[in-house]
Image (cartoon, rainbow, N blue to C red):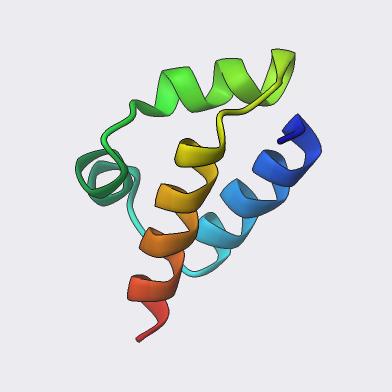
Length: 60
């Protein structure tokens, strides 16, 4: 996956008001590492899927 997709997903998570502590716990990845992927790409598919899962759980 490319970093613009990650950036958009991170933006959606912030807009939903989901805390990064919860994201880090559920997705098993640190916010610092997500920022690194956002700046340098490519993003592992598993990271994207885990973030999408957290986002969908947060809206349910």
